[in-house]
Length: 354
Ligand code: SF4
Image 1 (cartoon, rainbow, N blue to C red):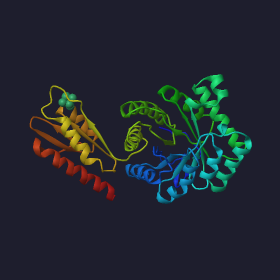
Image 2 (cartoon, protein in one colour):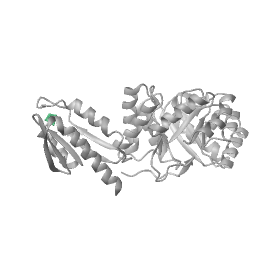
Image 3 (tube, rainbow, N blue to C red):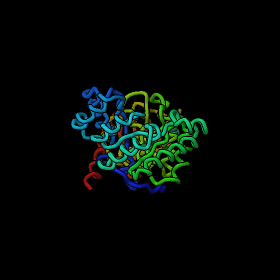
Image 4 (spheres, rainbow, N blue to C red):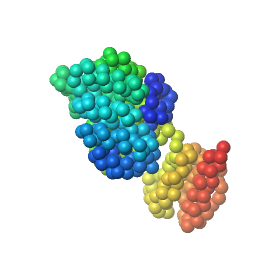
């Protein structure tokens, strides 16, 4: 699975593009000027495994709060600004990246001032094209289509390049799967800048999980994407959890345990749903890349166990524990989960020591 070769940039200490791991971002929803609330949300995101955080800068108070906020956190900080270039000039003095669309901030002189400030501090600019807010000339000519989004991105890139600025990353977000895939794919061959991928306004957990998995999974499997955000109307931690799972299941990140479990059927003699829930809960702290399977009976369990590091094949009031394809032991149903979980932990510890 080849990944498109892109220029590498840095947001704080996080590399984006080139051969850097694909980073996960999110955004706070507090008023940025409410520093303690914003810090609390950033702390939650960091704990969940977020790599980069973005905050909205809507007015001067928000912009001026960035300095103190930055001093209180260790995650790289991105300021999200629309239209008001003066806010960008304040923000770029302290943050690690700004997200602004040069085409929305007025004349060339303004773009030059922002590019100069970012160049002096060595921080990148994210051009964040959104299907819902294209510049009028692209909206009128193409509508909110992939073509319109790509033309807008190329126009914004040129505005920065004309100022001698190339420390750029790009996002092309739409609220549906098809336009998201089409626009990123269309632009990928045309520029070497890294891409921030995401579906915007993707909805609540269930809907976003499906849309984001389809769109971002497709892009990642086709080698597109250098940093990503899963947007969810919901809890901050869920965004990170879903993003990391998409990375894991698209083969882009090896971290954590992958669980294979069967859907159950009439052959089942055990409460597999409960057993899988227990396993998921007890192994969620493990970062070691392991594959385990928990299956309801021997029909498919032995086949799955051949590919798993550790497996359970449940039977009638008992089950087998299988390690690397070899039967380790046969145990009563009420004992098997505890022994299995101990074995998983033991294997993770052994692999971590290597
Ligand atoms: S592994 Fe066994 S219980 Fe599970 S779905 Fe397959 S046949 Fe049914």
